[in-house]
Every structure is written in structure tokens, then in C-alpha cells.
Length: 127
Image (cartoon, rainbow, N blue to C red; front, side, top):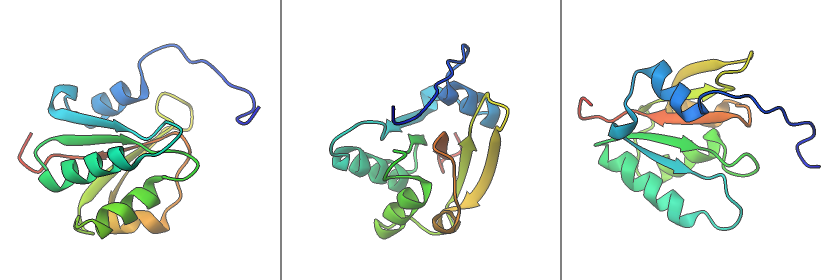
């Protein structure tokens, strides 16, 4: 009722597609999803800690109604992440409108993204 018509697309998950498209291994990554109802404070703390540590790739699924890429960027910058940290945003993976963009964290607040977005922040240790 909220989303309208839903189309089921068989195949790989969007996270698997993002890893393949960006050439990163899932085993070198930490996956954090904000796709849940209720509080997300624990996940936000985990995200900030992982980004600041920088030893693993961080793959984050935003929460469409209140924690989208611009909100995530603002949260990370307020928490001490550098605004020039490079991030990749993958949108609508495996669909006709698929897009992958590279941005600086500080650029995300002024950019709009679809509800079908994934944010990837690569490890800074050469993984």
C-alpha cells in the first residue's frame, strides 16, 4: 500500500552486484543495513566506528524515509569522518536505471539519490 506496485527481479542481490561492479570482496567488507523499523542508533554507531577505523570496506543500505545518503554523510562528518573521504553510491543495481557515482563525503548532502541506493566506502588499508 505504501510502495505501490512491486516487481520481483530474480538474480543476484544488489549488494552482490555492488561488490562485483566495484571489484571488492564481501569477505573484506562490513555490511550495515538501516532497512528496519525502530531505532537505528546501534547501526549508526557501528557505521561510524567502521568508517573511522577504515580497515574494511563499508557497505551501507540507507533507510529510505529518514536516513538516506545525504543524512549518512552528515552523520559521518559530524562524527569525525573527513569531508573529502571518497564514497561510491550505487543506485537501482540490476535494473534499467542503474547508476554508480563516485563522490566526496562532503558532496553527498547536496545530492539526491533514489530509494534503491547502496553506499560503499572503501577500506583505506589497500584491501
